[in-house]
Length: 618
Image (tube, rainbow, N blue to C red; front, side):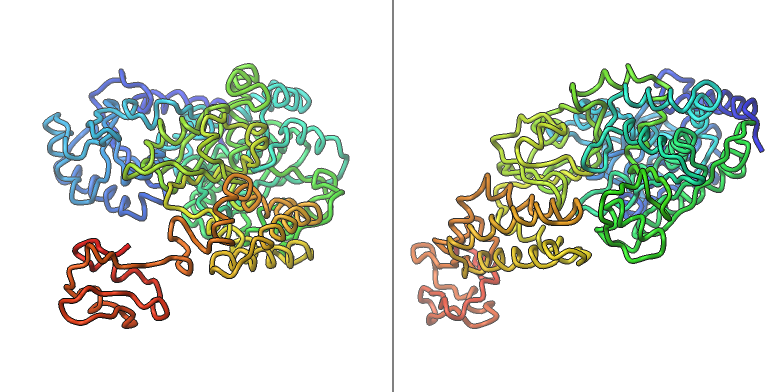
């Protein structure tokens, strides 16, 4: 078991060794080659890149060069990513075959490999990470260690002030002081609703019981969301440490991390982190020589979206079917096995240690009046810089999409952004300058959610988008309450009618009325928020719904049943290629004659469009 003194010695010695990770003026006689090992880069062969670097360095007997696996750097669109410190050179789209050239040219000869340097959106080569527009408006707090430390090495976490916060809490603070610090910081839960974290901890602390529990909700189920996964992959110890602080504060000695089994890398690194912390005596009994004891177990979820709802998650941990409980009582009073239970999500916990070490005044100085700190977003969809971003609350949607995200590919127009996943709403172009915080998003009919942010260009049909989210909700409904189980199914049927050209204007009215009733009558927050994507698209894109219902037209041609494919007689040359490739013989006409499409046979597959060399089909 490590004593506090031994931990401090590790921190001092290891930090000096790793100083070049964060200090570009560090001693350049040693170099660190950082290779991203997040899920995205791992799927693009970053493990082979890591192995190749180590193999080449060993074969060439190169000294003072270390190859380090890290978590996600954030700019997933450019992966696999390799960064060389301390010069901070940023190489993108690296392949295993590039390792030899990087070692020879950069490490041995001291020259950058220009062809691998990351290009910014304007096409300019970027020599250093901090020169990229993607990072300039970000502020990394929850992601502070991601892309910097080896997530599988507890000593590296300790070197960057790891387990210093729990040490401070145990030695210098009472539980009430911890609660007070969190309340003054203004931190709100990052899992969706934004309930004040300090208040939640205070409420749970206030209930007397012989046993209490701390739970981490890592069941990240929103389509396109990967914030919590990246934190667990890149900095798992920060979550463990914050759960320990929570345990000390509310009077719990047991913690559970509920993480979906679809996150194998996160699960592996979490398990390794727990084992390392136990070996060091940081988890277990008499932590740091005090009478405080705490241990953590992992529980795997089977991928049910409803288990992201806190009470359904508790049911699943207990080995029951994941269905929401009736509230009250709330988990703070009666949670796991009927005992007081504190539940926060991964990103919320990732902020706790930073607040304890830097103080509530530091944290509350970031963000807006009612939304403090930063927020992590998984930026995806029709945007150039797909990836993970962390920005101060109050940053506008325009800044995220265009300054950080690099704008819309292929010069297309921004149409909308979906925030909050199946529980959120669409933000149209007219609200691009809306500050991203809890209140502002709620005012325009959306919500923060866990942090998925999907950007859409003008090729996307908003009726089809609403249908996509309803399909997801219907599929993932637990079926416990009638409004969600039956109501969302009826909503989906109406949307399917509209997209197939069978809908009427009255269907739009029925859709809206159903949505409002489901919001009012569903048992849990997921059912109550399920209609949000439909209501927000109806609010801002009602004209598209009317076109589907009245004109039987989809302006983007995304709804194939409403598409009208025609051959322009002025452009048709009679070559017959469209007729030759049509799979259902829907194109008529003799050799060298202009062709026409028989609408009764056409299945709107688009084969003729792609095969016409004269662009005569539209």
